[in-house]
Length: 197
Image 1 (cartoon, rainbow, N blue to C red):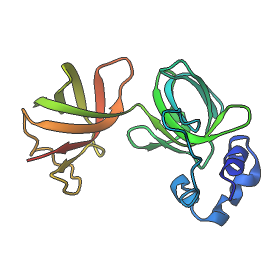
Image 2: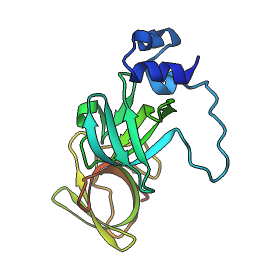
Image 3: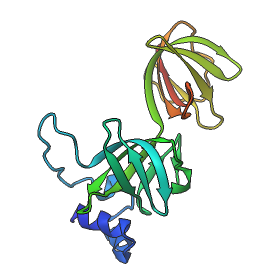
């Protein structure tokens, strides 16, 4: 299977993407699981990976400016997986959001995305306090507020399966927090918090 052809067809609106079901699941992970990735020289940027802040959203594409100044145009298709605290649709993407995207570069430089992560953060922090469904965190000397989100936030204690019960979190302990940053703030909606007891 030619990954670039399938993603290009999807991004450009061709009916060819409907044939993806012939390969199995529409999930990008399943569709492209056996494909070899192109070799990238050590230290070189991955041409099939984008990061930055979204500057515009239009139809099935958005533009973003990378932290290194790279200007990205990213197209999504029905098969693109989008995460914004939970699996989401294209309508969840907004100007000002931070993104990471993986896909295939098209001939015009556009990235046809198979996965997009919106505002995702992965913080190692010190848990300062817990009050009113908020976690006060210290991350490298900066204060971060973690919001508990109903039916989303879960805790993993010592590698056990994730549970919604946060009562075993201990103040003054070190934790790892996965979640979605709230742009323009020092706040994060918590998806998963990993703690050792």
